[in-house]
Amino acid sequence: MQTTAWIGLGANLGERAAALRSALTGLGALPGTRVLRVSSLYRSAPVDAGGPDYLNAVAEVSTFLTPQALLEALQTLEQAAGRERPYRNAPRTLDLDILFYGDVSLESAGLTLPHPRLHERAFVLLPLAELAPERVAPEWLAGVAGQAIERWGGADWGNILV
Image (cartoon, rainbow, N blue to C red; front, side, top):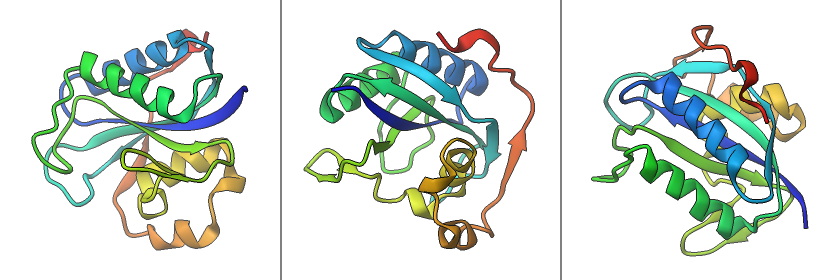
């Protein structure tokens, strides 16, 4: 069954904008998956971690992949971008998270939907609110008001959507 999902994208190592652009191309190339819309880019300070600032965005996709198959595909894209997981919240070349998969609620060893920490992160909520404001509770936005984040105009998504 075709489902709309929202994917959080982030990178804080290497050529961040290029990594996000490549990830969007990879998302659009997944079987039965199409990128519908992409938020603006945002620059944010790491949360609960060190390292350089992140570039973040959210993509709205339409997919026939199951939640688990989508997660596995996202992890493959991360690995192709050189993602390493030496410790929790380590800096990364690419981070892809399923924020919402339709209205599915799921809790398993490897995947929780909706994403369990999305309401704690301005770098998720602001770009998500551009695409799906109905999915962002006003109290969530108020709760992250102190986090350092700004819309970043340094990249034009251009013709990435396919």
